[in-house]
Length: 241
Image 1: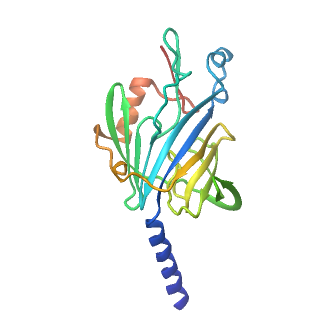
Image 2: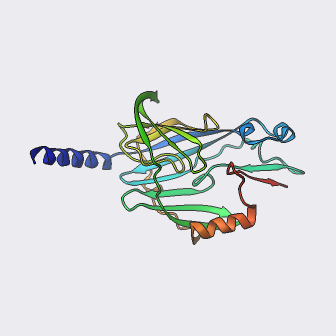
Image 3: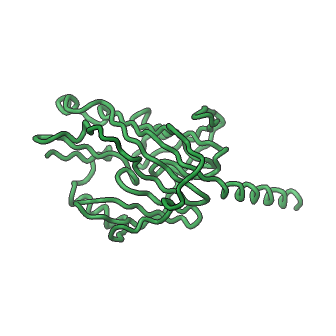
């Protein structure tokens, strides 16, 4: 009984310690576009790698993930007119705001579709992670390794920092005993890497997104298919303008 009480007391201390943690992580997302294209002519029309920056704000049991402020550099994947190819990659938070409350399991995704704003009501679905003892140092944080797989079967390797005891991470990747600082999907097909960690988060940003029509995930997916067409086996949607 004494050992059981000690374990409970230690767990409580860890949870209280976790609730005091807050910060902002800036990630770079790098996609190997050629890995997703079979047509050599299409490869010739776009650069091999697509990069974008995102920020994750977290405090206590709340996290908000969204695109980082953009510079004025042109996007080589958007083109400037004519017969262009626009490729859309990624998951929740790629083009809007992804809010998660880990205490309640609530997930809200604010996004745009067909010039309309929506707020998707959903629940957090943590992946089935397998933890390992292997370590890697990222931005002076010793991170441990965890592995899993996407719904399409792609291998996922994540590196999380136990000294940042929050279960947050980029896009859908969360649920580990520490903030995720790097994710490698499909052997470098898509990689999220933390570029900067700030010790605080703007409390004004840590709120539920409310700008948009409330909708369920299932209904939004139907609308997405109607507007953009269904994704292929690799989850991509390609629009020719």
